[in-house]
Length: 63
Image (tube, rainbow, N blue to C red):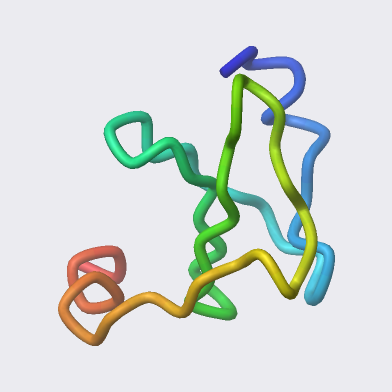
Protein backbone atom coordinates (compact mmCIF):
# COMPACT_ATOMS: atom_id res chain seq x y z
CA UNK A 1 0.00 0.00 0.00
CA UNK A 2 1.40 3.35 -1.03
CA UNK A 3 2.19 5.53 2.01
CA UNK A 4 0.83 8.66 0.31
CA UNK A 5 -2.48 6.93 -0.44
CA UNK A 6 -2.75 5.64 3.12
CA UNK A 7 -2.14 9.18 4.43
CA UNK A 8 -5.12 10.59 2.50
CA UNK A 9 -7.56 7.70 2.98
CA UNK A 10 -10.03 7.91 5.86
CA UNK A 11 -12.85 5.79 7.16
CA UNK A 12 -15.95 6.62 5.11
CA UNK A 13 -18.11 6.45 8.24
CA UNK A 14 -16.23 8.39 10.92
CA UNK A 15 -13.41 10.00 8.87
CA UNK A 16 -10.68 8.70 11.20
CA UNK A 17 -7.34 7.43 9.93
CA UNK A 18 -6.85 3.83 8.87
CA UNK A 19 -4.24 1.18 9.60
CA UNK A 20 -3.03 -1.09 6.81
CA UNK A 21 -2.96 -4.78 7.77
CA UNK A 22 -0.71 -6.19 5.05
CA UNK A 23 -1.17 -9.88 5.93
CA UNK A 24 -4.97 -9.64 5.74
CA UNK A 25 -5.00 -7.07 2.89
CA UNK A 26 -7.34 -4.83 4.86
CA UNK A 27 -7.59 -1.24 6.02
CA UNK A 28 -8.61 -1.12 9.68
CA UNK A 29 -10.66 1.60 11.36
CA UNK A 30 -9.99 1.38 15.10
CA UNK A 31 -12.80 3.79 15.95
CA UNK A 32 -15.52 1.74 14.24
CA UNK A 33 -13.85 -1.70 14.60
CA UNK A 34 -14.22 -2.30 10.87
CA UNK A 35 -11.90 -3.83 8.28
CA UNK A 36 -12.19 -2.66 4.67
CA UNK A 37 -10.79 -5.08 2.06
CA UNK A 38 -7.99 -4.24 -0.35
CA UNK A 39 -8.51 -6.13 -3.60
CA UNK A 40 -5.79 -6.17 -6.26
CA UNK A 41 -4.19 -3.19 -4.51
CA UNK A 42 -7.42 -1.15 -4.57
CA UNK A 43 -9.10 -0.23 -1.27
CA UNK A 44 -12.83 -1.02 -1.23
CA UNK A 45 -14.15 1.74 1.02
CA UNK A 46 -17.80 0.70 1.11
CA UNK A 47 -19.63 0.08 4.38
CA UNK A 48 -21.36 -2.97 2.88
CA UNK A 49 -17.99 -4.54 2.02
CA UNK A 50 -16.42 -3.96 5.45
CA UNK A 51 -16.33 -6.68 8.06
CA UNK A 52 -16.75 -6.20 11.78
CA UNK A 53 -13.59 -6.96 13.74
CA UNK A 54 -13.84 -9.77 16.25
CA UNK A 55 -13.50 -8.98 19.94
CA UNK A 56 -9.96 -10.42 20.00
CA UNK A 57 -8.91 -8.40 16.94
CA UNK A 58 -10.33 -5.23 18.48
CA UNK A 59 -8.58 -5.79 21.80
CA UNK A 60 -5.27 -6.44 20.04
CA UNK A 61 -5.56 -3.16 18.12
CA UNK A 62 -6.20 -1.09 21.23
CA UNK A 63 -3.14 -2.35 23.15
